[in-house]
Image (cartoon, rainbow, N blue to C red; front, top):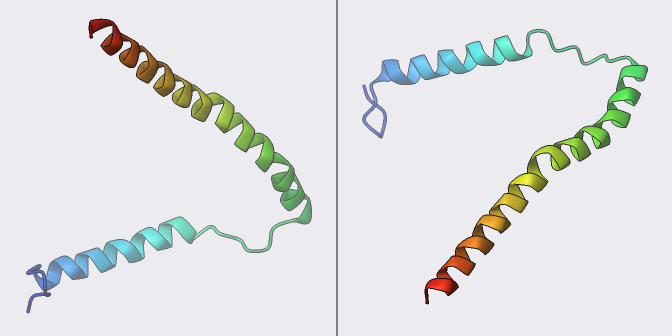
Length: 80
């Protein structure tokens, strides 16, 4: 028996088993009962972490992209 795409049944079974194993490993230590102080600290830390991520990675990548595009367009104009 094969699936519609031609994969054997054991490939599908292996994928289902891998999904189950990854979900079990990823969520086995999850505790839905988090202390209120931890929740408050996470709420305070999230904006700071987002700003740090933007300043460290997003802004420099955007600026580098802009500068590369600007220098490339000036180089093209100089040749013409």
